[in-house]
Amino acid sequence: MPGGGVAPVVITGTADTSRLEAPITMRAYLICAFAAFGGIFFGYDTGWMGGVLAMKYFIRQYTGLPYPDPNDAAAVKAFHLPASDQSLTTSILSCGTFFGALIAGDIADFVGRRTTIISGCFIFSVGCILETASTGLGVMCAGRVICGLGVGFISAIVILYMSEIAPKAVRGAVVAGYQFCITIGILLANCVVYATQDRDDTGSYRIPIAVQFLWAIILAIGLFILPESPRYFVKKGKLESAALALSKVRGQPIDSDFIQDELAEIIANHEYELQIIPQTTWLGSWTNCFSGNITNGNSNVRRTVVGILMQMMQQLTGINFIFYFGTVFFTSLGTIKNPFLISLITTLVNVCSTPVSFWTVERFGRRKILIIGGTGMIIMQFIVGIIGVTAGKSSRHDSAAVSAMIAFICFNISFFAASWGPCAWVVVGEIFPLPIRSRGVGISTSSNWFWNCIIAVITPYLVGTNKGDANLGAKVFFLWGSLCCLSTAFAYFLVPETKGLSLEQVDKMMEETNARHSAAWKPHSTFAEEMGLTHKGLALDVAPEDVHTAVIEKAAG
Image 1 (tube, helix red, strand yellow):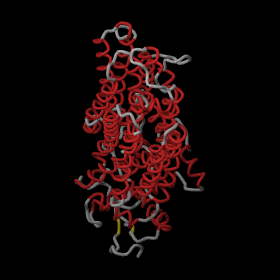
Image 2 (image 1 turned 90 degrees about the vertical axis):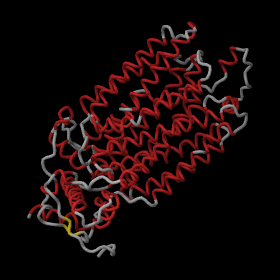
Image 3 (image 1 turned 45 degrees about the vertical axis):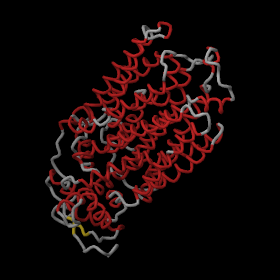
Image 4 (image 1 turned 180 degrees about the vertical axis):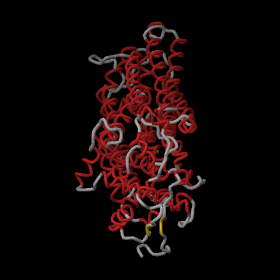
């Protein structure tokens, strides 16, 4: 028997839709919580870059400009990195993450979810060495690209891994933990940057960068002891390994009815999908992600487009403008004495607001809080823009108006943190069927990084004050508010409600209803019943190459 060590068990499914998962255990929470630690990478990088770009020593080292006389207004205004350098150093990481996320889907299907994340930690560490050692733009950018590849691996596959192992009743909440870790990463970076900002040596920027090694070490070591995704083993035809992994994740013996029911449903759903999505060549497996009719809510191309747009719309809310360029933006207003402190406050608001989503995402569902959160951001951003072009202008010297702008920016962050921040990741991890899930999540995550890159490239020119820059100042919030209107409309018309459903039930829901009516859909059958696994069991020790034939025979008989 393959694998040895486990007595032969025959897997038999259930027709009862309420019995597809074991009761939630503390073990499941802890596994998901540790996996969510991968969000620290994303958030910390966002946080340190925004602060370092405004550091006096960093500006002097990278531009060659001497420290300005505080009484020389022209010299003070000119003492900053050019918009082109800000754009390059910030956006180049997203170029790496774009390709890293695309590649990660293939690697995750070949070597497993855990190993792919561990590989991402190693690649990230190599890039971090170059970033820390840099004293000029060339080495820094090389390090940023390599770090980006690692972050791309981690950001795509952590979401995939968490979605595949989390219990359905709390999947939204625990995947939202990834976004929470992103916010913690941003806050930690801002704290370190705030502590080193006044150093007059390379430690001012090297210390914040080097701290990232700690996150890579913790995540890589921890993943060595976590179980692999049982759905990965089902995809590979290794049913015995899948049962063992599911047993560890759910905290149940391998012959438990709960393990049998859930594993049978995963197997049956996978085999059902294989009939619709035949596995052919490597190129064919990629084209499968775009097969079908875009008007069909259950087609692969529709799911892929929704995943791509989900991550695109998250970026178009403008939230990373605040975290990437917040310190630079607050400095450019000319009315804030300590921009570093204000940036620290905004990141603290982000951290404190995100846990609200742990409750709302399961209480109200994904669709509803996306729509409510998007509407709230529209209102907040237009208010910031209106104040910024009236009483908040630097020429007015109205400190109360500036304080109001900062307050509404914080409200905007709160709406994002409790809605679009976590839900974009949750939905992307849920909407793809197993045969294309890893590639679908990878494509969607690469969309996030593509638009992250676009925003990082153009934003310095939008708010820059040099000749040729748009110098929008607070008017940039009219742009973000308008784009939030687009994001909210997208959520209403195209995002399905997946609350409380297993990943296999999400497939069934998307077959039978559209996004606007999805919240009312209830599961009424199981794939195990449809594929004949409720009355004819499937032995765990069947060879991987024979699994498909064995299931088809039971479905036909």
